[in-house]
Amino acid sequence: MNSRLVAVVPFSTALIFLLYYLFISPLFLYHNDIGWHLAAGDLIRSTGIIPRTDPWSFTASGSPWYLLSWLWDVLISYVYARAGFIPLLIATAAAGSAILWLQATTAVRNGVGWIPFVIVFLIGGMGFPQFSPPDVFLSISPQVVTLLFITLFQFLLLRSERINSSKVTAIGLTALLLLWSNMHGGFVLGIVIVATFAAHALVLGRTQNAAWLGAVCLFSILLIGVANPLGWHIFHTVLGLLTSDSQRGITEWQPVWERFSGGLASPAIAYLLLFPFALIGLLRSGRFLLPVLALALPLYVMAWLQIRYISIFIVWSLPLVAFGLSQLSGRLSPIVNLRFRTITALTLFLVTAVLCRAILHSQFPYEPELPRVNWPKEEIAYLEAYHPDKNLFHPWNYGSFIIFQARGGLKPFIDGRAGSAYPLSLFENYNRFFQTRDWTEIIKTYNIRAILWPKNENRLLPYFDASQGWEKAFEGTLAVVYVKQP
Image (cartoon, rainbow, N blue to C red; front, side):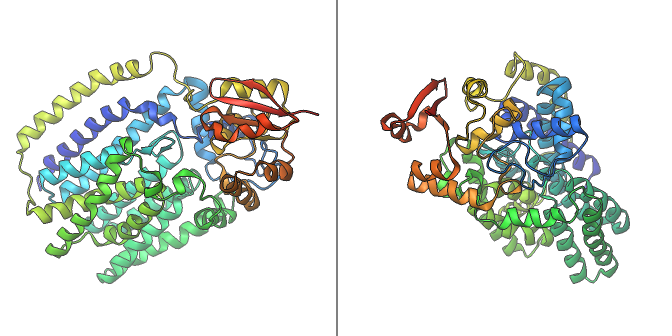
């Protein structure tokens, strides 16, 4: 294929979606864990030490905390302290754009048709960033590192197969895996990806390629176990988080059919429904991107079962789905000429340069902050000022805001650090509370003396209005504070 064609189409795609991601960039702040990631980065930068025990909550105080994202936390903390959220939002939009550039390059190199290309990348590009807030996957959170790196790994490994450069690729992948392991627990997927391509090379009889990629897997595991600050704990921590059923109450761990509400989730669902048609096209033609397909199939099943895998499935399978639909439609050669695409790309570049600043200014006329629609800022300030030592019970999503705002001045019950910081028994008790709605048990077990509860979930609040010994101490914009009287 014409090399200029390979360059122009992905470039145009990346520019279009850069504008789109900048436009929706306020959503990047809706991930519930941003607050504690910033607080963790601040803590590491101020002390020079990666914390090994929980410094904030009263339910896990002093318990081991395996901070998988310490390097990510330090980086965003540094940027935020000097320039606020805007550079982080721009970087997140650029990461999303880079993902689509890499996958569009792979798709065009495989000769996908223009119409399937537009359909797949339009739906996929709109679908992978979010399901519905707070389940935002393209955000200022370490998940974006995993999304970018799985795309980069696929791109490099397919390129290695094409030009037979396994030695150079192996060195690069090893370095990337070490970096990845210090930013997000998703690095284990990188090892699985390399192992899958190694098996594919072995099946094809490319023993040298298979040996190099197998060496990447083994050496990376050894290197991560030795060089990562968490040591070998990093592996059992990640595997524990992946296999534990204790976090089923978290929205992103729930199946699609329990969380789908239309709106922002519609493109992701539409993409999931496209995949079977792409499989039909692949089966009819007998042509496959076999290592990509080998991982896409289990990821597809996992995406339906836990929505946190939807974004991973989409970004991984974009070229595969475009190729399959091209096979199904019989259109394997682009139908728009190179001159038209070149003009389009140049036009988009100029428009992007002009509009980027305008979009950012329109979206953020003032310095952006964590979304106040989710952040009970005045309620937390009240509790920190008047009841800082009381054991506090609150919903899951408030924990990160408490850590971000109070920095230990008010101790949360639970937060998004999940099983990396909290004991299994806490999740069991928390989940049982939402099943039984029994305040008595949770209050007695953890000696709860203050409640911070959303006003829009007021069906649980009559218990305190009717109970002697509890006083409505403060009512803010988002939540109500109840305090146990002596």
